[in-house]
Each structure stands twice: as structure tokens, then as C-alpha cells.
View 1: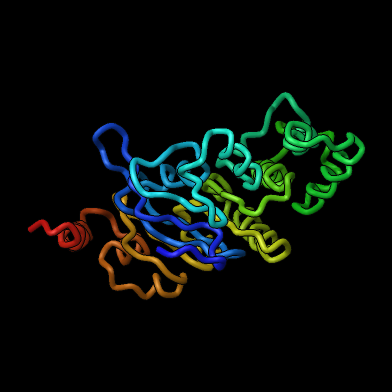
View 2: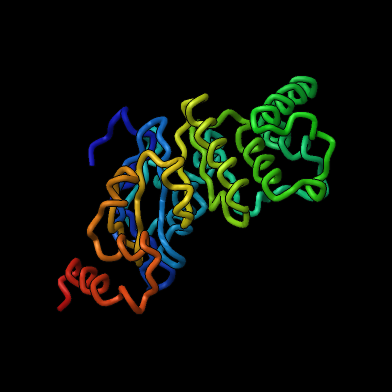
Length: 267
């Protein structure tokens, strides 16, 4: 896979293992600058392991990850820490500190990683909260926010350092459809306004068509389909059809398993 200025992230033949168990098997893909790249798949398919590799919380067994043309996997721990400051992370649980106000949660990365004056940090915190529709909530505690508001506060914190890339881990999980669609619209707004590169890990089909430029579908640690949402919707791949049609394993397992066996040369 050649390096290219077109891509913010390049994943080359990535292999991840837990002990002797292979979780990701020679995964390769590119993420263009400014696009929303969705990693889709069911439970246990390797989505979370892939995300941990992309943000540098794990080192792969083989292969490499290029971030903005730099080999992220070959960096020292110190170099990876510096690179991660160019990344924002939105956690499934929001991961707000309950003992801190919303404003202090958002300001935390600026206080930890910059030498900005406190007055400047306060202004930037207000700006980030306004971006996500939480203007005036600086003094609230996380326990006073709804689930959707906590997700927005988490996004404001992820935006605090003006990252080039934002990673989202199941952003719509636990939200009702109306609140989830509002969060999806916010993800798209952040991408369009700041030309962010966004990587979204999800199993929520409703979100995919709203936010995705490219969808990468994982199944049992392998990429089984990749392309724009409309291409996957029309795919004839057995597992993709089973996933999109929400058919249970008993109904669709035979064809999908046969297809996967054919990929490895098994009879």
C-alpha cells in the first residue's frame, strides 16, 4: 500500500492477537482526509480491538498503521503520546469525571497538555460547549445531564485540542432514536465544519446511512465488505445481507460460513 497525501490513516496488513487467538487477520484500508469512516460489525467481530490499535492503546502483532504518513506502530511511547494529542476520543460511556463540572471536564485536556492562560482556557471551553449545543452548562455536574447531553459533553472534550482525527466508540449506544439522530447530525456537522477525519465504530445501522462516507464491515476479524453505504446495502455477500436484513444466525449461517471458508481455502 503506497503512502499518499490523500489519506489521513493507512492500515496495512494489520494482525492483532490475544495470546494464540487471532482477532484481526491482515486488515488493510485507507481513511481519506476529512471523511467519516464507519467500522461496522456485530459483537465480537474485532471492532474494539481495531479501535484500540488505531488510537495506540495496543501494538499490533504484525502490519502497521500510518497516521498522516507517519508509522504510528513504530513510534516510541513518547512519540505516540505526542501523536495522540492530534486525536480526539469519544467513549461509549462518555467517560466524564463525575467529580468535575462539565466545564472542567472539557477544559481538562487544555490544562494537562497546554500552557494556555486560564482565561483563554475558559473561553475555549465555552466555545466547544457551544459547538455541541451545551452553551451555559459549564457549571453543571455530569449527573445532572441526560444521556445524550453527556455524549455531547464528551464530544466537546474530544474537540478541546482541535484534533485532526476523532474516534467514536459506539456513539449512539443507549440513546433513543431521536436523540441518536441528533448526535449523528452533530458528528456530521463537526466533520463538515472543521474538515475532521472521523472514525466511528458502531453496530447501529440507523446511524450508518446518516454519517458514513465509507463503511468497512468486519466479521470474525476480517473485512468482508467495504464501500459507500449504498454499495453495502446492495451487496450480495451472504453475511452482509444477513446483517442488513437482521436475520438470526440460524437462518443465514450456512451461506456466510461457506463463504468465509472459501476465503481461507477450507473445504
